Image (cartoon, rainbow, N blue to C red; front, top):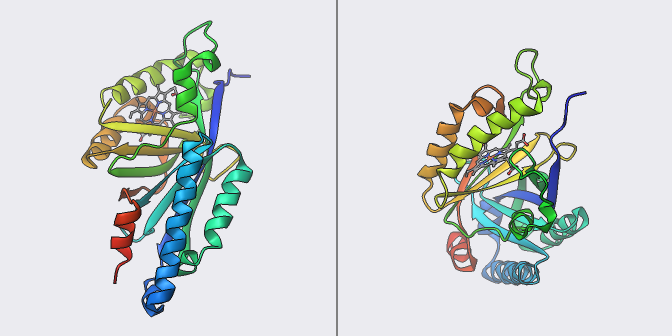
Length: 248
Ligand code: VOV
């Protein structure tokens, strides 16, 4: 049997995409809308408290285009915690004015391709911080799921560890040239969702997503072995910008 990469897992992730039912939102009266918004703002404060107690992290972004209107990305310690936050949102008044567009379940993952020999990664605070990250509040988010191919001639999983490591090194070099411009969070979803990984990128300049993803398309690991799902892009929401977005 070929050597599997060993992986480290951190917080569980839920990307929860919702669309706003504008007809229902507009049909509600002022008081109903105010109650829904208040409840949502209170809920948001609870997410912040979870983050302050280092038990998870949440960010909320708009989604541009018709795939969804917003995405709540939650990181939590367990799948039960993720389900609880999803349920709690579903029970809010605001949720009645939304429909479910898409969701993605995964877990923050690091692989050992570029790890240092002989080092126990769990003793490295940088690794721990990457496994349980506070999600960045950059202006833009980009999310897409992906696989590595398992076709007869292009089967990632039949390559030797050395071949995969060489390609991942090249991948990492391209990624590193975007340091400070794009922050990536890779979440593994084998056994959890329809694709093998979720890729979540954060940047203050959305064009850097295009440049990075395009450049990676020429790199063997993506050019030859990458398969990609739908892309979602949007901008950061906070309590104030959410209110602005929902104002009639
Ligand atoms: C912002 C830049 C950036 C940087 C610095 C970066 C670096 C690295 C390193 C060092 C490593 C390996 C160790 C680890 O950390 O796990 C990875 C791992 C991974 N990556 Fe990456 N990646 C980036 C960015 C980045 C992008 C944009 C994509 C999407 C690919 C594309 O074509 O659209 C991606 C994918 C992945 C995946 C799916 C994995 C897991 C592969 C596996 O087989 O296990 N990644 N990645």
